[in-house]
Image 1: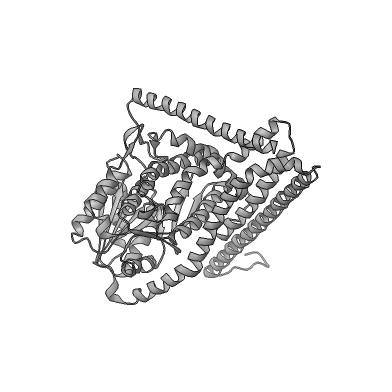
Image 2: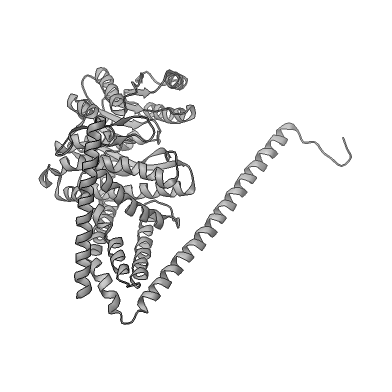
Length: 529
């Protein structure tokens, strides 16, 4: 050994290395947070500076009445749209701060009584090509939660290959679970999620012939949190008219910072609208990520048959079997029978999220095409149920979904009209309004649990404009359905598909032309006044 050097015992060397590694990681995290703070601060400073500059240019116009005829035509539409958003915000705040805390206190009282425990818990988990680490995270957390709750349970895992089934059984065996938990694994036929879920529910039927308790439908990339059963099950005891409930979501996003901000924004807005709708005892979707159902509803033959083969009767396309949108089918089944459905904002599951392959714009548009297609394929028949069946507010929300895809585009149409007339002041006037409103909406997104990222205003615009174009495209091509990950599509025969697609394009062009002409007429009238 050289003079002046010392040798630490092995345990101390290990401890020193561990401490150095922890210090290094903590230092990196501090630097990352500091860099993010600086980036956010500079970006928001530039954002506010741009807004003030555009506002100053607009207000410097003389006379000011040159701007009036640009702003006034949009006044009514803007008041309506932003007033509707404010209504959702106030309803959500009232539900989360007043109504739901009272429900939660009642649920805790019910949960303290052992006689109120459900007779049986059935869980259906559908997976598609999940990794071993993902399967371990999902099933280990689920098994631990069921074991802790202490109620007889049956888990049906619908997987894509034998390797997944063996791994899940290994996780089940190594967990050394109590005897009241059973595991059934099924191989999917490769014909889609609907067939897999229907087969799993029929397996639950055979294991729970009495149809007692609750049934959970969840995706294979959803991780449950501790105490989830205790926080959800009591609601079915205290609310006899409750058919199903869904919970809050957090996302573990694999991808760029843009993708992370987008998913965080979507989940924040989901929290807002779900809370608002729950005030009326209804939601507009029983999310496929994780939803809990009353067992005698989920194990009913009609429910399973609708889930497996749900057919839309369309005036132009005829009978249209639905490929995606299983969560909309389960929702409609409960809605048509007048059942209540609620959202629990204080109860979470963690979802593994990843955009499809491709750039952000194309990947997000593909996801929106699937989501909005599910919405539009189901909203017509739900609207026909009428406000008496579901309540006026819920019914109008469905109607508003059909209208908002058009009203979201009125601003760009008006702007284009005035610019073509040579009124360039319309551009800074319009942009200043856009920046101001999106800043306020971003504050709301942060309040609902989203990120305070300067990307959020851009993502809100992306969702508004790109989302509107996607909705309009889907509206006239409801027969075009596909999964974003699985190579499964649904369509008609080639000749018939070409004919319906051409007619859909012609009809879409006609409706868009009528819309643009109507907006131009309104703008021309305002310009003359």
